[in-house]
Image 1 (cartoon, rainbow, N blue to C red):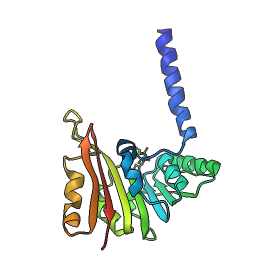
Image 2: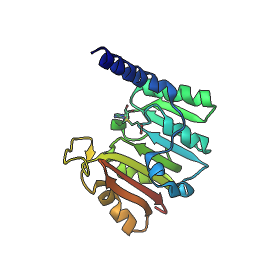
Image 3: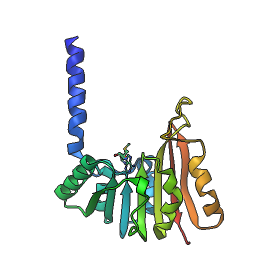
Image 4: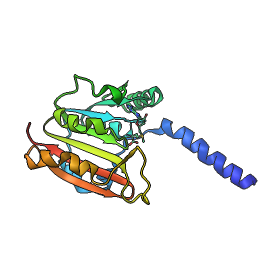
Length: 194
Ligand SMILES: C[S@@+](CC[C@H](N)C(=O)[O-])C[C@H]1O[C@@H](n2cnc3c(N)ncnc32)[C@H](O)[C@@H]1O
């Protein structure tokens, strides 16, 4: 039907244009827990891993952080860099494949964000990259609340909490948020000491 065709045309046009409209956007978990904002740093260096088009990179930079944004997609990286330049924000965007781990020079970070990308091989390495007081925010697709459907991109139930439990028990981190629902899992931790 013509009306259906037009409606889908419009939606796809909007979806294709969307990458050109990256605007500073808080991580999902900050929307869900506005009180978290007080716990997040506003100075120092930050990493936005698997940054996509960089909306959260812009948000962190706007708050005062110097941001490194990494993603495997050159298109995403270029869009991130362009948006940052347009906003006059300090974001260094580069192509990076997490199969290579993390760049060696990423140390003493005030904040790490990895949103909607399951880099399970790097979960513990993230802690080593934070400075004392630094905050890690991880959000991944989860099998919990996903109608039981779980694929390779979905964390198993309890995956994030289990990963960081011994670090929390050892007093290395404070867990600020640990929740799984609606097909998404998030953990927010503050690194207290090595
Ligand atoms: C669902 S998007 C999330 C984008 C952004 N973090 C957000 O929350 O909107 C997942 C991102 O992971 C990136 N990605 C996929 N495989 C990757 C890899 N091996 N190394 C780095 N980034 C990767 C994709 O290019 C994509 O931008």
